[in-house]
Image (cartoon, rainbow, N blue to C red):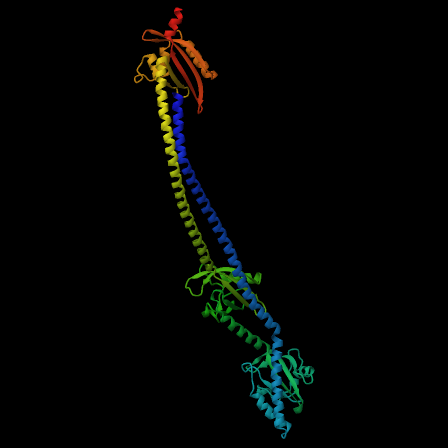
Length: 523
């Protein structure tokens, strides 16, 4: 009976596991997979943001670097070609003047050379170019100036005009003369609008044989360079890319100071154009950013700097990365930067996509989790009811078996008992109570209760057998007496040890053999 009871408990446990364990496993797996996917997605998002940031800065830095270097290359090309361009232009102007001279000579052949030269002088004096900087002059065969915009120069001999190397202008011109070709000479001379300082000039001259004169013109190199600078600044100022605009500084002192540079171009801060700059100015975060980029330029000549500056189209200042380059030929700083807050919108887009994916992942996990749970509940319920019907059927058989066992025990006067050595719990069958002639509802079964019925002369022997049983873990049998209400009964006690879930359980039978013993004794 005790073994049957344990089997019934096991069956109940199996039923619980069959119904709920698959559902719990599915829920656990779905939760685990969902958590793992969320963790994986977040890791991927972090990597995407990191890669996007690196990629963005690489692209933007290359973009502004290339923009500045392109402009710098234009300056270098122009500087290398400045004299060539001046000579090409002067050559064209001289040839134009010679054609005019030829036409005037043909039209006035009836006049004297002196009269024709006078007409030619008046005509050429009216001509100018390059915003009135360019003019013509005429030299006679004695190197005297016949025509010149500085009237004080007319009548003077170029042999008395000396360059900074103490070589006369006439000597330089005569040495450079080539027949039927335009000749070029470099020397220092006053400008019509500045008689206090001499400037380096390229002069083009050509001999006009019919009148025996030299026709010349020239261009001051610094004027040509300044004209290109102005055109260059105008071009930069027309830039439409406000997020990557170029600004240019004319540096007066690379070491800094209150007037270290003049702003030449800045479409974002037009109010600064033409103003001198102070390196003590701080950005909105308190950084002396002008001192910082001057230090970079002094040490390396170029480099990137992060600072906070006004962004076009907004009032507040934004983080900005700018590439600065020092053009040493013109002593200009050419710079171009970008505002990385555009990156924030791209990161926000990634975050939004990730959030939408996670929401979808959680919804799908809940949906399929619910579906699988419902399926498993349905299957478990079907299995449960099948098992329950089987158990009820088995229980009926078991109850019937128990009833038959009780009847058999009643007839044969055999009772069963079990003793849990670890919990000291003992269970008697109904027949045991009948043998001991006690009410099972008034007496709690125990080993001590059992011993109280054992005859005093047999107690030591019973105890010894019981101890040996526990020690050897083998079956044992003993016949001894019990004393019931001053009556002596003989009983046969058989027992065997079982190990159930690490518990030591002794199961035995107790049979009343008094009648048999008495009969055998008489024989």
